[in-house]
Length: 511
Image (cartoon, rainbow, N blue to C red; front, side):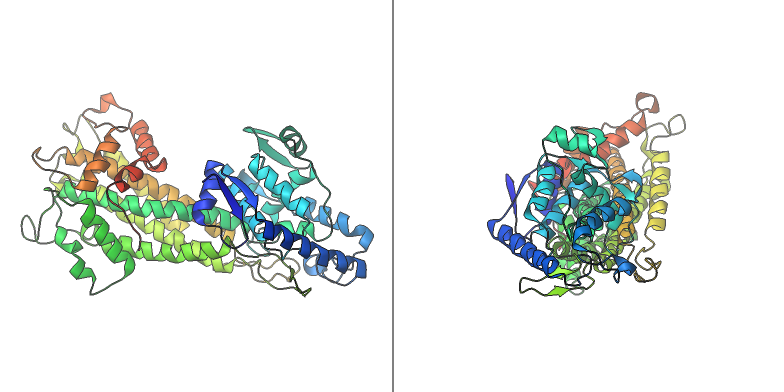
């Protein structure tokens, strides 16, 4: 993509990823510029008429009954940003901050927030020039939106806080000056418009969801390679079996595996070598498929949320001011908890297939997939490490959205904890990707112990050859540092080279 045009309604997850990770340029549609101007005119009228409107002429949260004068309305907004920037912990990744900035701009240009156009344009200029606010990852309750982290996003706009520019962490003022972007003084309603919403948790969760979709496809590739390493039974993947229990994810998984293994002479049929395979092989359509169906649900929620108006109060173009709860993260908090569970299961089953590969009693191959076990440990501890990650994922899969701690003098008495849901899901995707990378590494090694006359499937052959360009076989422990090979294996998945190579020949689907 050369340019993403924001309309407030049509942003896609692919565009989000392109902007967040590939630095695609962003503009605002002309129609939305008019909508922003019209919305701002309504706020200006409210101020001039001295009407009582939450967050415009009143304090915030439980202080909503405190009236604020016209003279103090600008200071009120700056005070909001200074005091709400109370985050803690490591900074969010650059792509997560860029995604958050994009989502916030897309929400603001819908024309329901009453913000000035010039303020939106400064945030847009920061995005396009890659001025990245330093945002601690912890501190949001997910209602009233992501107040603390979004306040950190706004600080550099005021010449405050910290931001990265050209990879260097600077004061907010320095970063803005070096990028040639003017700082501003917020006007009435603007601080609230910038920080009241689900922007941070949605950004983290949306990127994790995109990565999870790719992980699901990679898990099918890993499972297909393991099938060949075990000379697995293809009958369990026949379409006629799955049509009588037609969950979309199951059908998609079975089809993916069949197409990846097309032409393979490694695979077998019922009673050729054994009657049935273990569940981690035979039930891949049901296990992977369940995760696919869950993540398809999450994708739908992400598509809605990245195009949503999540401010409060909402300024309608007919002049109504509606104070509601669109900032509440519950609709996506629950979805990101589902994402965590779905991707944790992918790591769990991948670790079980890894164990079957390295265990001589289960595979019939040399112990730990090395030619001289004893002197060499081979893949022994790769399974330990994968098991540790799978166990960590199980702890992280506990839903955050079932928790709530009241805040703001009990005015905000039920919150979503959605940012925790999103961050947990992101970590689980990362852990599960490493487990799947380890399975692929072990499966490729195992395949090399089979008879040379066997032929790989049309998709698995591409996967094997692509993988072996980066990650070598292990003959003797003394020849390698296995961490380095595991890192290379993980990178082949992260940089998309393996998936892209396979999908040139076999298109993989999740539904």
